[in-house]
Length: 67
Image 1 (cartoon, rainbow, N blue to C red):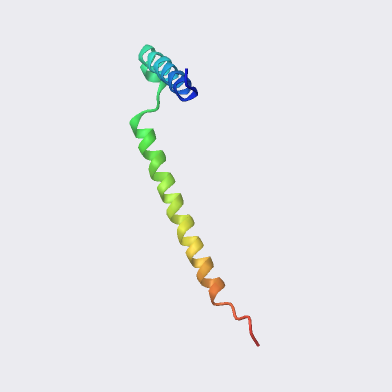
Image 2 (image 1 turned 180 degrees about the vertical axis):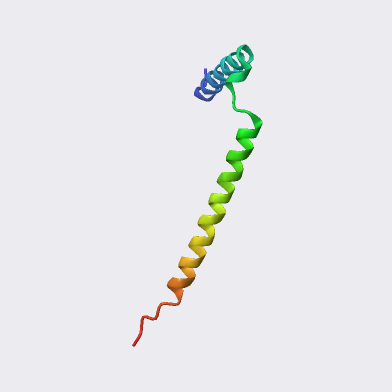
């Protein structure tokens, strides 16, 4: 069997077992609210990093190197 098909077969088996586990205990997964809050916090963090990087690059561009 092709190695790619072996990998895909393994992944499908893994996904099936995870799905079965979640069906057996539905409270084991993350709630939608937790996922949304995490995504919002990640977006805010990326925005803050982007602003800081822009300010640092701007300040670095204003540094005089000549006499």
